[in-house]
Image (cartoon, rainbow, N blue to C red):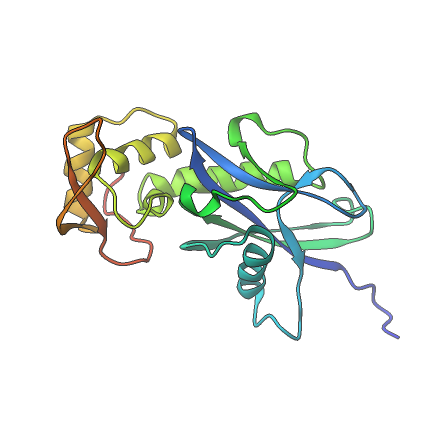
Length: 220
């Protein structure tokens, strides 16, 4: 028997999407103690015989508890301490992910989306985790292609403009935004493809040049 106490080791995922023009996070109702019946971020224990690393755990958690595979997943931070879990000293490696709204049309049982600006009380220290993840996302949105992963595979420039504004929580000048985006070369027009939205004139559809994060040489 080991002379050292083993900490509780988990991986939690802050999964974000856009719905009703607002950034929202996926919450899951806990079935077991501690905090049975309360909402928390989806998470789970590391399966040492199955998971190659914590990123693999995060992907498994997303698949098992959200039914999705995120186009973008990034390690956020490691939260640890003796007071964050009633069961004992715990360590949680936290990831954040973003998915298009279409990926969460059918939510798993016991799950809900919650606007990040109106978070309820959550189990453990998950409110602090969501806030830290939100700060990271908004910071990266100022200099990278991250918000584009909240869109479907094809999108219009006005839709991309709207997503950046919704993530950043600010109004962006359309003409300036278009110049900056086009200068970064991370999107390309889809040949012969135009939007089918009836409320507006058909617009050129675009897609990401590569399904990987692109850092910009200037801020948006």
